Length: 430
Image (cartoon, rainbow, N blue to C red):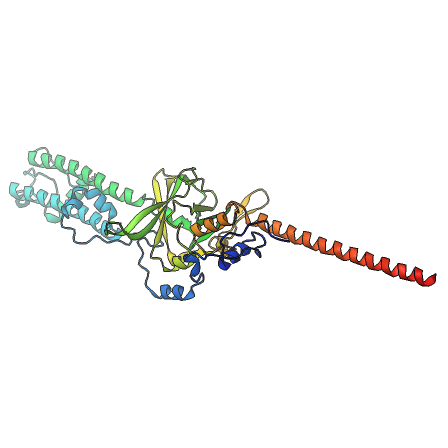
């Protein structure tokens, strides 16, 4: 029985693709005109091996850190105009070192001034003289002046060394040290608090799949990756973005290194705003507006590109904004695969199996580009939105009808033969 799909300028490779997808009997589709990209080897293993040998230079590493270093920065004074952010951005070992250094220098500085006051007034020459009123009682050297500076700035006040009312310069210094000590405390403690409460570690529990996949979803070729949250405290107002990082050359000949192009992951429909309670598969439909419109499986293996994905949201416990990043290079994009399910229904709750979070399985996917797939389906008169299941069911129904016709023909032939035999027997008896 002939296929109901018309044959118009389809090649053997295209027919093979359509047949693999279950889009009906293609035996009658002949006389093809092969597209340029379809002439290439769809499973170019040599290109994959050659690419694997080359060192891949990432723009954003898998852990989310940007692989960019600023060099030859001459206006370094700009870092000190925002000293607070500079201290917060420092590594922990340098931050702790500066924290201890600032307090130590402050105590030593004011301790030296207290010792100078005692030295200038002659307090050190009248130690033990009950008739002499010193500026600070029981201050007999630099060490005691240093201890009195610590007690004053930290408001400990042991009561052994105290300032007297006969020293106006000491009273002024006490006020200055109290005010400056409060400023130092506010600055350094605030810096440490901000650094401790940074939501960077919260991003460690936001996970991305190790690979992205390309396969058919709802009849469209789609690029997909999976995101998940390992904590029970969720990310509020989570949103996802994806950018294609690829160098390009303009029509005027200008070379733009690492050009950034937005990938639509549901901005128009609101699918980019996530309710991240369980792992979600983020989908980018490869249509005429997608930069992957003309990229086939063989071309993807040769491309120098990187997909950067950015997940943003507010931490439920602190209300601070958190951002998690990851990236996929061309070798980490699996063509013709889907993600394995991870969500199961248990007794009264849903369970997520994170052992299968990164797992994929192979599925029927044409190796041609989305443009070629759209052209093939248009020439063959088949809606692109038709699903694989419906095509396979239609093909199975056609085969069943053919088998039933064959059986009916054989039954009629057998009945005719039996009738001829009966007639011959009756004639012989007569």
